[in-house]
Image (tube, rainbow, N blue to C red):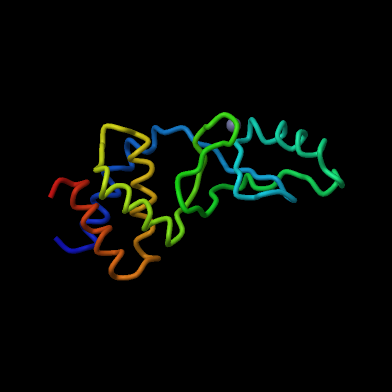
Length: 144
Ligand SMILES: [Zn+2]
């Protein structure tokens, strides 16, 4: 099997269960630590709290909501821990590979399918060494 067939086959296999996962767009608060993410339900409350303690409340506002954020790892809402949309950056792909190579994969778990989908999607953005690791993971997913 050529590489594209392996990656596409694995992506197709995880896409079904991954599509059942509930997730929303990522929001964060301008003027604060933007690595802290919130869901649509929690962002306004979080903005209100930060405004109350801010020297200049007009600088504190909600941002994001247009889709996925680029991340080192899966993203969850700071308040309710709901799953949020993300794409992995290069080091995020490597960290996820470290994780799945160590812990193994459980394709019964819809959340893992969602996370594996994002590792596979990173294939074109990483170096050859990391691509080889993704191919191995993809082979495991399709059961080769
Ligand atoms: Zn939330």
